[in-house]
Amino acid sequence: MNTINPTPDESPASGSLIGISQRTPPANLQAEQALLGAILTNNRAYDRVSDFLTGAHFANEVNGVVYDTISRRIEAGLLADPVTLRAEFENSDALGAVGGTGYLLKLAGAMVGIINAADYGRAIHDAWVRRQLIDIGEDVVNTAFGSTTGMTGVDQIAAGEEALFRLATEKGQDGGFLAFDKALAEALDVAQQAFSRAGDVVGLTTGLRDLDKKTGGLHPSDLLILAGRPAMGKTALATKIAFSAARALMREVQEGPPGTQPKGSVAIFSLEMSAEQLATRILSEQASVSGERIRRGEIGQKEFDRFVQVSRELSQLPLHIDDTPAISLSAMRTRCRRLARTKGLSLVVVDYLQLMRPSVGTRPESRVLEISMITQGLKALAKELSVPVIALSQLSRQVESREDKRPMLSDLRESGSIEQDADAVMFVYRDQYYLQQRQPKETSFDSQDKYQTALEEWQRKMDLAHNRAELILEKQRHGPTGTVHLFFEGEFTRFADLDMVHDG
Image (cartoon, rainbow, N blue to C red):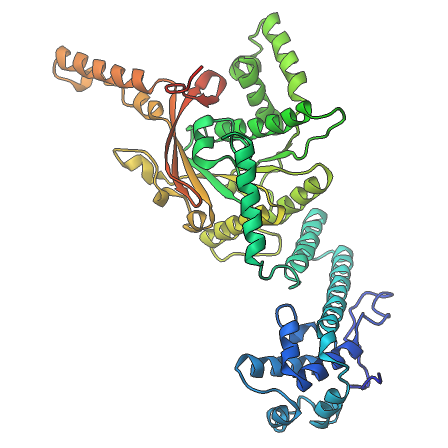
């Protein structure tokens, strides 16, 4: 097949990087011309490439303009051939560089057959992807050489990773329709897993039976928001869930044949607490030794020995902690993808999302838009890696102004997009925390009897709320909502099942 020469210099403009820029960027002009000819001869060829190809993917600008014009006519239900396109270009200089409208007839003559249209389209797209990689590489090198960018080396790494991620996700070839029979087969497979587990959770366990019953465990691709006011125990509950998930992964290894490795791991991004503080919390909970006493050194030899023994057992868990402060969404995504590739990834916990930064290179106009970008990015991360993501969130202070301080969806701080993007929203609430602040004062009553009556009523409520917490499942896209009652032991910051109805 003879190649039509659309322009004296048919290679795109090169970048500024010496050495690389002197080489001709990847392009497949023969495929471009053959594809355009196939579509002009038979418009049905357009259907084979329309879902992933646009005019911007063509190396030759003129060919891209012709493709976009063809697309516009076909999408409008109109015929696109050399005759109809000639009318489109007669009063335009778009084809001037290639000899005018006669170029359309030459394209039609370059057609090999519509059966190859999809192959031509993929060849064009692949050349475009490689040109984008060259551009990203040039930008990375040129930015690294520059000293006035205002970006540190770490920021430049994150920006480069973000550019590569955008190219990977926006390349246009992934996705598309899934035949319904295949979707049904996947749904049946999930049901089979649940059936084979004899009523157990089909997802990753949270370590809390009543919560697992409501949610079926933690499911891939779900974004779960765990919110609450300060001192409610958000971090302790998230740590409990992460630890339980890691222990379940380790249990599968122990029950499997020798040499089995964990099929996944749990990643905790602790933006508020250090890795050492978080590890101390887990050790305190599992060893039943007060974290406060550990920090002050007020423990005996037996407690210290138990502490060491438990730490040895926990060191085998597939649990990873990243305590980078104010981590960006792009850096978090990169680290999760790396962990998924090297160790496997089953769960991501983020504590907490208001401390995160959006992707490097983005500058949201407002805090609301910034939080929206972060939650959308976390949901995209859950879908990309097919893992559940639990993100902790602060609540606004308007909770404190109400008589009933149980949180509602409207209390989510900074952005309604948190509620919109999440597959589930849970609130942790402890009535004991607020009751402690309402202890009656004798000076507030005009008689000793009234004070005593109020004190007794307050004590009765305190006894009912002692060591109890509520996990309010306010939104669940795939199941029921409701309240899960939990046991909370403040000394060890430990959440557990509240065994009011369980057997054994």
